[in-house]
Image (spheres, rainbow, N blue to C red):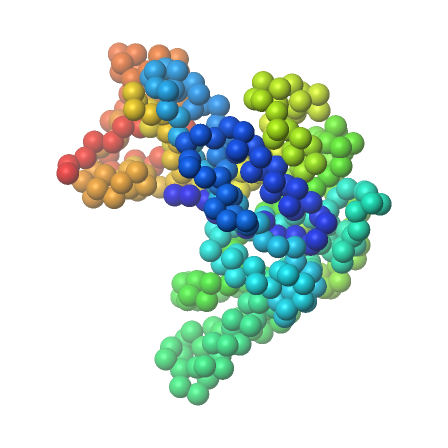
Length: 364
């Protein structure tokens, strides 16, 4: 399972700087993939994970394969993008293929960088949400127009009309109250505002030095009358510093972060937020061939996790041999953990835990 995140924001909020920082870090550290940039607007980034280094040393393998995240850099959107203004309209459809949306809002002061259409972080967020809503309304209106006379699915048409009414109130699709049947049907519309999202506040260097006490600057009154929700939890990142950080060797990166009182980079915090937003977690496989991280949904059973590696593993699942990461390290690998009695044989009903180290047994 590869995670895909669409990065959206107004011009000059630091979206491209953040995107370049993410790719710069990947270029500096990755050698497992034959490419970093798929095209000018898409890049693949490794998930930072120090546990893999430890696992590789224990099982004595030179090969490390981290989980990866695909970032899609959507061109700077402006008010009216959904109807053709600016350059953003042609890229809005790229968001449909993403698992989540990363909204970048501006929370830094720089008189040399023009605020295009931006008044404050809340304003940034609402302008983008409005464009996504307009695009969703275009999708819904098209469906209603094509089906209003001879509906193939009366329930879906009724839902479309309900969605249209609520979207016109500037309510995101994910916040519209739906019954169980409607929750299934709404997925067939592939609405942009149905996608989970999180927000990155692009802060200045001074704010980064006191990041634990950081809050967004005072917000202007909501132009939508409060119909679009407040920002909520925001991940603070200084894109400018992240770009500098991405150019440094790993040891220098730790020293760089320490100077700002941080133990994690913005990339690590951004990806953690993405995992939390999508309800994802990692598990590991470790052997002489490779040490590797795999991404699954929280609550997935062992057979489901096995299927992420190969569909045959899920179909022929017998059991999972599981060791907790801390035990794997404490007892120096598979043999030591087995001798200490901490290796568990788990059945099909076993629900995977974060940081499980696993070998799957299966019939071909």
